Length: 242
Image 1 (cartoon, one colour):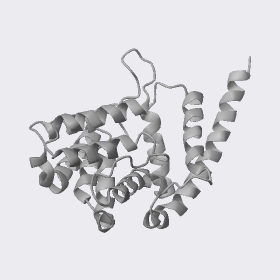
Image 2 (spheres, helix red, strand yellow):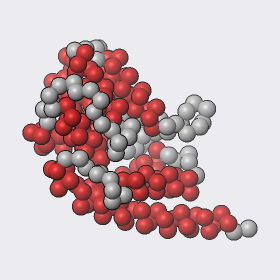
Image 3 (cartoon, helix red, strand yellow):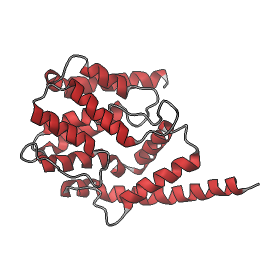
Image 4 (cartoon, one colour):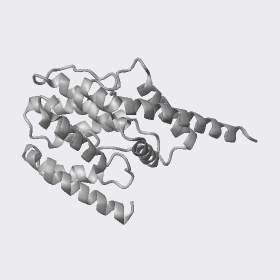
């Protein structure tokens, strides 16, 4: 991480703390902010950073009228990527579901929310382990199902960013997996993006989300999938040469 990037992230985190965290701070034990800041400021992160959290919080602020409990979604945004590692200590690939589980547990460790609200935030975080198949198992409050849908739509909203931003985000994710050989990385990402692009999939759950992000997301996915297939073919050709 360059000094400039470090200073930029530091400014973003302080802006987020003042605008979004302070209203929630009394709902958490001492040290909660420091735990979050330590995670989102880690040098191996490039996409799962404070910039991502800021993006989701800003979008939530414009869509809060769709939520029964914006405070619950705000807490979920803060904690959903609090733990993010692409490798285990032995160097083996780390499953994203493990990051999700550990993020949810870190939230619960610091939460002073009442049990129903703690359960609601915990379940929203866990839902990000499988955006497309997540569903409500327990209604923590009236409107919880809609809040889960909105939260998952927000987390996938970067897929509908302008193409140049989408490309930058993809490069940041590649940085986080820099230790993975190119062909392995592209093959895995192709599988993920093809699952999102499947016409039978409801990428965004709410009508407002689909209207806002789906057209661009569909275009981005189509273009990126095409480029990745070409890249994988090129890499495969190079590997096959004697």
